[in-house]
Length: 332
Image 1 (cartoon, one colour):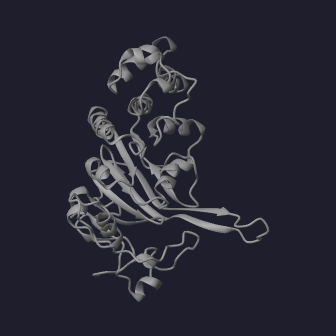
Image 2 (cartoon, helix red, strand yellow):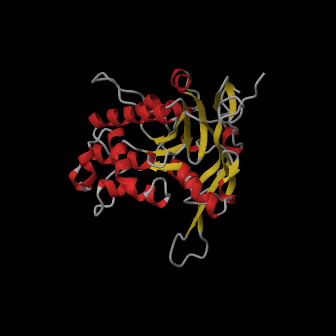
Image 3 (spheres, one colour):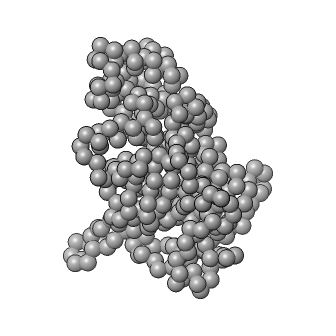
């Protein structure tokens, strides 16, 4: 019988990325004359595994640590504790050459397509620059490769000489996607890739990402706060609260059988389809404090089901149902 790890999946070959007890603490000065700096616990022991070819959705409200985790994976920040393994190797132990290869294999799709593009560079320059830096193709062949990439993401070849302000938001995001896939990566971090787009355009971009995944065998870490988007895109979903994974399960399993009070609160916040339909408010008014390393459950201050045990004992992320992990003391 196969064992199940904290990825919510059975231990087997095919893991492309492993995050092991990642912690990130930011130290900031509270006041000008204060001697004691304060610590913000952005990540508190996150463990996840991404398998080749899957889409893992990472969902949670703003400030829960989703983007911080993405920055660690992209080697833009270093964890305070823990390890991040890409194909079995610690990315923070890479030498310069290995790190350059890693940057080619792991790419990012930005949240704001306009801010992610240099207004002084054409679409062709934006997509072609990574090809030149990593020497993917000879310089003479860059333009033809860029033209093919533009067609791949649904843009015409004559877009190559146009500037970002000449495109719509959806078209700019297509340019960003073309740039991300230009290096033939294995893993793409998609950080809120459609939140800045009109709803009518969002579905087109999401379908494009799915098509590219099938065509190129891509693996996605899909970071979002939109439950409808993450349901459409993800194979597995991890729910994050205040720097911790509180629930992790297969897509359908999570939506059919949510367990953690925070996951239930997220689902309860989805607007009803009927005009007069309302849902009861299930969270307490207390706010969790990111400045403190709470000894117990981080959701305790807001949890409507909290017990005295929750105040003092931090729940582990354990398998409640097959492949369905939950960090909660309820119903144990």
